[in-house]
Image 1 (cartoon, rainbow, N blue to C red):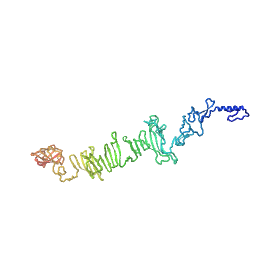
Image 2: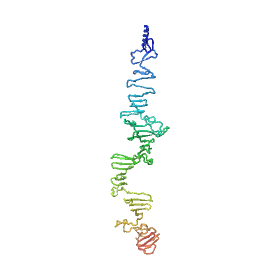
Image 3: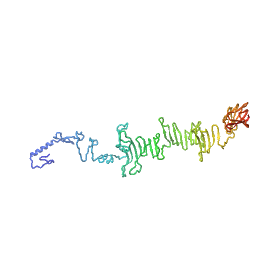
Length: 557
C-alpha cells in the first residue's frame, strides 16, 4: 500500500513538512498492525497465513496440503506448484513421496540415484542400471552373479496356462505366416572393438506365427532357435538350428524344412521318399552316410529296447562291451542272436566254440565241432536238422563252389520229379527217386566195400529174398520170391532189363502164370504162355521189354 509516508515499494516517502500528530497516528497504525501478528512463543518452524475472516494473521502447521514436521497436512492441494533450482523432498530414509496424479510430465528426463533408474524423455527409453538407455527398456548389470531380471509371482503357481497367467509377454501386431516373427529373445555381446553393430547378437529364440491371426479361432505358433557360426562377417549369418512346429514336431537342422516326424534330424537332403507313418517318431536325414551312436563304458552295455503295455522290454538290441558281442533280444530270450567278431551265435549257442554260425536247437549235445566243418553248426540234445522249403513245382539247391566255379557241386531236390540229383561240374551224375537210383551215362559206381556182409551193403553178392507173393511187383527186381503157390506176372510192371527170381519152396509144382503181360516165353524155345515150376525148382524171369517175360531155369517147363 502507499500513503503520505511510504511509497508503493514500501520505502519512506519524502514530505515537505510533518506534524507530531501525524507521526503519532502513524505509530499507532504500526502498533495495530503488529497486534495482528501471531505471537512467536510456541510457534517455532510454523507457517503464517491470513485467517479465514481476512482480519488477522495466524500460525499453522500445514498449509494447502504442505505438512511441517510430522503433522498431518490439512485438506487441500496446490493447483500449481513450481520450484526452480535444486529441490529436496523429505529428510529421512523412511520418508514417502506420493504422487496421486494420473500423468506425470518430465520433459527433461529423470535420473534416480545416478542411473539406478533413468528416464530419457527425448527417446522415450528407460534404463535400469544405466543413465543412457539404448532400447525401450535397457537393463545393465555390472556383475556376472545374481539375476538381472526376475519375474516373480508371490502367490501359488498356476494350475493351467491361460491368457491371464503372469509372466513375460512377447507380442506383435496382426501376425501372419509372412509377417511371422514375435519380438525375440536375443543373446549377444558388446565390445569397444565393434565398429558396425554394437551390441552384436549371436543367438536368437523367437516365436513364429503358423496362422494368420485374423479370427479368434486362429493362433498357431511355432518356436525357432537360431545360432551364428564363427566368423560370420560384419553383417552376421544367423542360421535356424532347431524348430518346434505348432503341431509338436521337432526339427534339428535343415533350416526352413518341415519336420517329417516327431523328431527329424537333418544333416542334408537325402532326396528319399517320405518316412513310413509307422516309423516316423525319429527320422535321420542326410545327403550322405548317417547313423546314430550309443556310447557307454567298456564295462557296460548299450541298449535299444522295445516295450509294450505289458512289459518294458519285449525285444531289443544290446551291445555288451565286456564281451564285445552284439545281441538281438526277443521276449525273455536275451541272447536270441549274438554277433561277435567273425561269429554269429543263435539261441544261446556256446560262444566258447569258434564257429562262423552256431545255432542251438533244444539243449546241447556237448560235442565240439570239427575245425574243418565249423562254418555252420547245429547243436541240440534232440534230433535236429536243416530244412529248405520251396513250392512243389521248383527245384531247391545246395551249392558248393570254389574260385573257379561257384557251382562246382550241387545237391538238388526236384519237387516236380520227386527226386534228388547229385550234380558235379554242372552235370547231373546221379538221381535218386522214390524207387530207383539212376547213374548218368558213363558214370561208374565204385564200391569201397569189397566184402559186403549184408543185403544193405553195396555190392552184396547174395540174392535178397521176398516172402510168398501171389503177384510179382517192382519190389522183386534183383530179388528172389520164396513161394509155395502160383505167382502171376502182369504187363508193364517191370522195365527192360529187370530180372526176378522165383523159387518153389514146396513139395509140389505150381504155375508161373501169364497175367496181363503180353508175352511169356519158355527160355530157349518159341513156346509161350504160362509156365510150370517143379517142386524145389528155381526160375529166372528176364524182361527184354515191359511187355515180354522170358522164363528159364531148373524145373521150368
